[in-house]
Image (cartoon, rainbow, N blue to C red; front, side):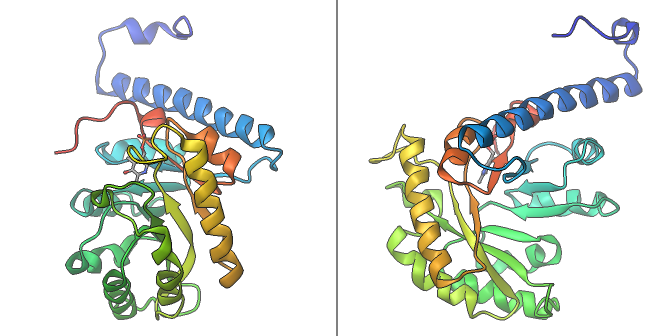
Length: 258
Ligand SMILES: *Cc1c(COP(=O)(O)O)cnc(C)c1O
């Protein structure tokens, strides 16, 4: 790509070299993603820095998280608990906010309240109850310690993708807002693969923005809109996303999820 900055890369690579190569790769990818976000902000007439980058590190090792932290990344996300817990543990010396973006079983919520700043995937009232009970037990019912919760909206006819129907958002939002240990922060969505919004991320994210603004009217502190991934961050920023969740554009292609 850049003609090779040093001769070291062509020397027999030791562990130190491969770590350096990876660091350079992540640095370049991150720069590209940051410039895409900045360009999208400008194109939408939004202030520079108004969109926060959450790097989704699933399937990638803790040493990548360390590199990202050294490159100024403050927000990282995971979608599977078993994978996340040891990674969070081994990065506990870093100043990071962890976001959980995957589907959650009610009997597994105890772990997530230990380390997550935010859960983006709240999609049913039983999960609200379970998260609240676990959050209280973990002492998160103190002001400033609450678990940030986003309601995941599903615009895809496939319910297996997680998320609640748009119609179910208001009552779920009220439930989170009234639950000890939880703080209602906003809405999360993934661009649908099927149904009327398939292939039209812009329209899907406009719909999400609409749902978010209605939530914001009822709950003025719920101002997060988590939308946009590697392939569609521009559409999400244009529609008003406050947080984009970017995996492969920063870390490279993942191994298939097992
Ligand atoms: C993996 C994942 C992302 C990131 O996806 P990329 O296409 O790799 O950027 C975003 N959101 C959720 C919920 C994910 O599971």
